[in-house]
Image 1 (tube, rainbow, N blue to C red):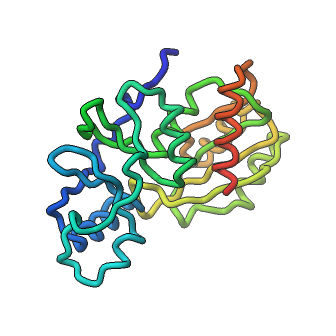
Image 2 (cartoon, rainbow, N blue to C red):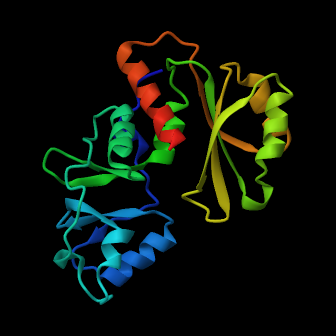
Amino acid sequence: MPALLAEDLLNEMIPPLKGTDSAGKAARWLDEFHVAQLPVLDNRHYRGLVTEADLADFDDPETPLSEMPLGYADAFVRPDQHFYRVMELAIENKIQLVPVVDEHQEYAGVVTIADALAAFGQQPAGGQGGIIVLTMEERDYSLTQISRYVEENNAKIMSALVAQDEVDPHRIRLTLKLNTDNLTRITATLERFGYVVTAQFSGTAVANDDEQERYDALLRYLSV
């Protein structure tokens, strides 16, 4: 499988903000697009990410973003960087999306951690056990029921992380770390009962030290 680059995973649904946009507009867009950060541009050049915490410090919703101090100005990747680097930056900075910026500092788009996770699920990785990422309606979430389906296939859930789906606020994303890397029967069982498997990956493949480190970092990220 050819390496996936940041430019291959750009999320077209998440727009950038401009310095002339107001704090109120930024707050509305964070809510509308169900994200915790959004990139801010100055004439197509990336300035940084505006966050919910940034906006909480400003009482006037008309305050332009150009007057606000922004963080994460150095948290970006180049279009031709491997998607592993996207995941590393997201983990290091605890951010939900990573801007993609070209050599002229012009903004190209963003890659979300969910998209990077899905790409990770298509790659061989080192480590023990496996990981499955599911999406479902909030009302369908029952870890007890899901555990039963997993255990019926002679496996156990070692850890679970629940997060809101970035696309649909009425759905959640559930990431499961299992004690087995044989995921075929488990995913088939979950899909038979209506769960949507969006990514899966295991530690069966022989990996080099760099891939092992990235896999371990991902497991730490998912265990937070």
